[in-house]
Length: 232
Image (cartoon, rainbow, N blue to C red; front, top):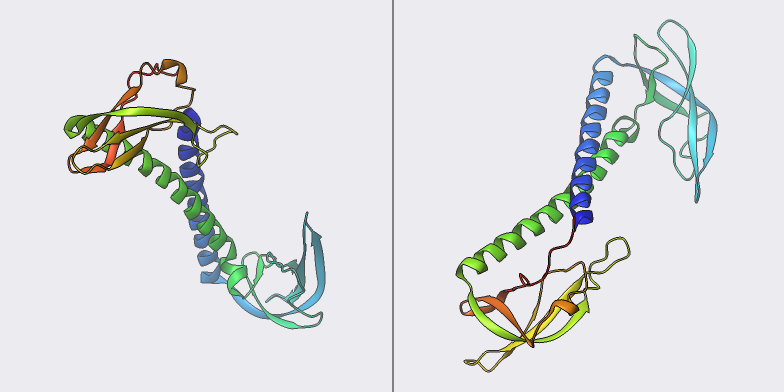
């Protein structure tokens, strides 16, 4: 289905973009630290920021730069409860070239943005790659069984929804059939690949061809080549 193809490429692209953003943020912090000067600052206020479900507190810090300038900045990192008290002394790092460019000397103030972007990027990229790999492995399995599989004739049972997958509010259909192994006298139930239209009107007769791996019927492919193609 086109939507799944779009999703896998979209997730991968977003993941790569976020990871690139994390790398840029990491390098920016590194460059800042290479030349930053350290001084003592004082928490002079707390800025409250209300979100949809929570409130965050960002400390306002005052510090004196190397030329005697008294400057203030708001920390880029906040917390659900005030992490600092008014009047508390904190260590401040600032750029000697741009004295107003200052940060708290704390791990999250320096590396928090890069860390968050890296985690989000890894998650998005992982999902995109997994969707791609699942598709590739399914296609390899299908090609292998089409070349080397043993053909058996299974009894058609039903057409059902695959409730484990939903895209845009829709569940794909699967064809369910079963086959009695004449050697072991075991019944094997097979499900086709996902079908994004109702195949019921196109199923002629009571049997369906299934390709199985020799000596391992758990690896199979239900032949749905008799179905029409979906219009693009």
